[in-house]
Length: 548
Image (cartoon, rainbow, N blue to C red; front, top):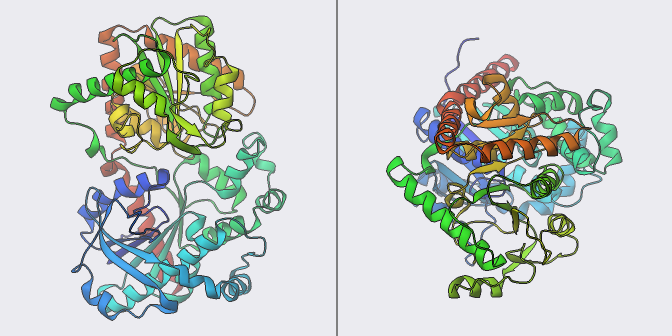
C-alpha cells in the first residue's frame, strides 16, 4: 500500500490538557514524535472544562497561534474556543472547546444519530450527554479548520479516541469530505463493564454478544455509539492484541492496526541526577511511613507500590493486597514498605499525620494504613481489605507495612508533596496484577525508571513482554504472571514468590535487573512505535479516497 501524504492531523480526546487516565499519557507522550514528523500540522482538541479558580495547568493560551482562523471562524451553536499550546514535550497546538451550548439541540441530534447510524441514545445516563456534546463540538472545530485551510488541507486525518468521541467521528464522517477518520478504542466500554461487574470475560469471550451484554448491563447507549464509530471509521485501531480480540467479538470489527502505546522518557532524570532523586524519594516515603506507623525503617527496606485507576478488581488491587498478606505471613528477606497509590474519594490530608511529619514524631497514629481522609471510609474496598488483612491492627508486627494513599500525587497532596514520578524513582519494585488492562502504562513507566515490575498476561504490556523477550526480571526487568478467569490463588502465590526472589538478589544482580528494565522501556520508545500510527493514517486515507 503506497503512502499517502498527510497535510494535517486533528486528534480529539476528552484527555487533551485534561489528565484523567492513561489516554492522557498516550497523547501527551506521542505528541513530541508527531511534532517532529508534522511540525504544527498536528492539532489536538480537548474540552474546555476549566475556570479561573481551577485553570488548566498544562495549557498556555496564545494570541498568535491560528490567529486568522480564530478571528474569522463562525462556529455553530455559540461554541467558544481557546487556542494555544499544550505544555508537554513537543509543545503541540491545542484547541480547548467550551461545548455547553450544544446541550440545547441534543434531542434533535440524538434522533439524527438513530436515523443515520442506528445509535441508541434512549437509555443514556451519566456522562453520555457531556461526551456527546463535546464530540460534536470537536467535529465542528475540525470542519471549520478544514474549510479555513482550503487547499492546504486536502489529505486530512481526523482521529478520535474512545467512545466519548464517537459523535465527533460520526459527525466528521457526514460533514467533512476531506477528512479520513481514525477511531481508537483504548478499552471497549462493554468489556470494561463486564469485568467491572465481576463477570468472567476471557473464558466466555467467544460466546458473548456485545449488544446483548449492553442490554443486560444497562450500557446500550455507550456501546451503541462506540460500535457505530468503530464500524464507520476509515481505520479502526486499538492498543493491544488482547483488546483487538475483545473488539472483534464485542464491537463486531477487527481493528485494522494494533497501535501499542509508546513512551517518551523525557521526564526520567538524567544519569547524573538519578542517584540524588532516588535518595530523596526513598527518604520521603520512609519518613511518611515512620510518622504514620511509628516503626523504624532502615535503608534496607524494600519499597514497592501499585498505582493507577481506582478499579479494585480490574486493576488487580485485590490480588496485590492478598499478595502482601501472603508475604506478611510467610516472611521476607527484607522489611517491606508497600504502598497502594490509587486515587479514590479522598478528603483532606490527615492533620495528625501532617503534624507528625513536620515535628518528627515517631509515635504510631490511629489507623496507620491511611494518609488522607476518605469520604466513603467504610465502603472503600481497598481500605476495607487492608483492615480485614490486619495491616491496621495494633498487634501487627509482620515484615510488611501497607499504606494506602488515596489521592492524586501531583506534588500538592499535603503529605508527600512530590509527584508520583518523583516517588516512583525511589521504589524497588511495582506490581500491577491487572485482570482487565488493554495496555498498561504504569508498568511501562516503572521500567523506564529502572524499577522492576510485575504485571499479568491479561495486560497488553504483559503480552508485549512475552512476545518480545524472555518473561523474566533478568532479561527484561519485568515478569508477566499468567492470569486467567479462574487462577486467582495461583496469581497471588506467584506474585509473592517473585517479590521474595527479587528481595533476595544481591546489589549487583539488582543493578542488572534495573538496567534490563530500562532497556525494555527503550524498546517501547515512540520513535519505534509511531510507525504503527503512520500505517493507520495511511489505511484511513486510502480507504477514504476509495469512497470519493
